[in-house]
Image (cartoon, rainbow, N blue to C red; front, side, top):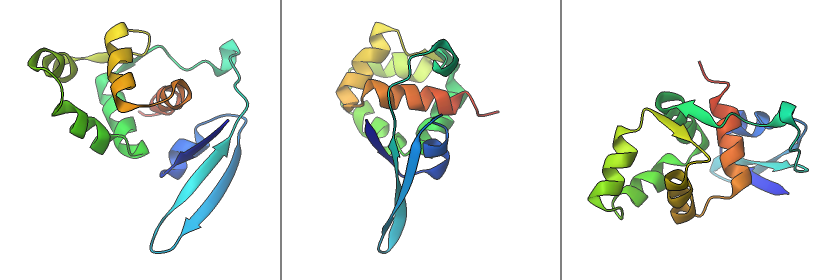
Length: 120
């Protein structure tokens, strides 16, 4: 599996991966990660992360602009759910609904949670 990131920290948060840095003229590089899908318990990201770590990880990994764009398309109820969350459970059906609307893969969510877990 190959996933591209704008953040080197995010790319390096994925254990046992092959990191390739792709320069872009006039822009920050793309960090391409090639991984095999490792579902061992030692590699499993947390299921639940505090909201602060979730939002900082979204900012660091470049997902925040897409999430902010999505919020404008949500119902008032969905916006309230997102804005009042104190933690984010990646197995929650409501979370899965938001992820589907963003078009983010399961491996990208797993990498986000893995990275978020490293944040103080």
